Image (cartoon, rainbow, N blue to C red; front, side):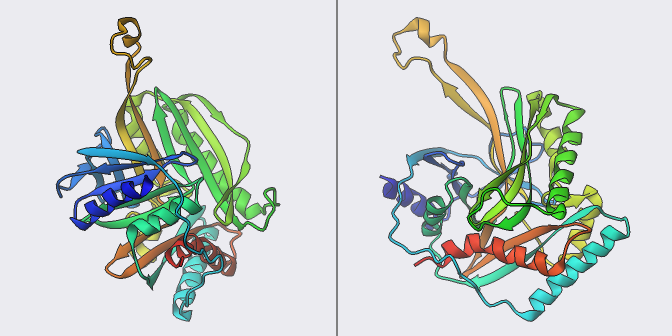
Length: 370
């Protein structure tokens, strides 16, 4: 039963040992990885094996959870709670004023020619009754098409999220990634009209990823732009794929992270603007997380006596990473929710503020469910 699975996760958290539990988009299984000591391991060059949790700022080390045990279970809903689709919390005028000022300053940098795009974010701090596995369960129940996770290390912190954005997947030399940008509220129409601002923002991300890939990957394919739904929001998405030597995984991570979808263009200029002006540390928000070089074994036949079919046993390594969006961090009895949006020359500060309000509803809804 899934409740038994959650009890194991609860126990690991209560005894203060590292773990992560997660479900990939549209999959039935929830997997948990347990680390049985409190050592902090780092992913130095992304050739390591484990579950990686990387921050936005690449000058800060990525954390690697090295599993000693694992388990999995099929998720079954225990929906004895009520989700309020219209949760709002009080935000001070000072907070709104600073964020709109920040957006205005970003627009000035773009119009002056220093930047093409910059992604600016803020935090929402709120007190709530926090039961981590209950929040995780509600995320699983509410966001089936997102990568839902809970991640804990006693020396680093507790994070939860439901992100709609894949960073990359590399398996058997086949690479897939997404360009995801542009946001508007879902109002019942899955084929809405999009403005020039959103289309330009999304195209910048696609062009950047294509440029980063074409020098080291082959057979690159770029899909048409489509609209996808993530919670109560719609985004523009392009799928990009190609062939890549697995030895080049560290290089492609270096080239892509942070992407223009979470940072801006040019990369270094927008990153420096963010670090200088956002006025807080993003930590793992807009970083990435997921399975890094994890080994899996496939058998053609489970009959150990069948020598012929035992030859079909294969061992492969795969990496599947997601951008850490729609997330919150738990600190004592407070939840810190992270939200942001892309700013271009066509941005309107008030509209950008409203976009962060809309994005915050993902985590607020599950946090305040009753």
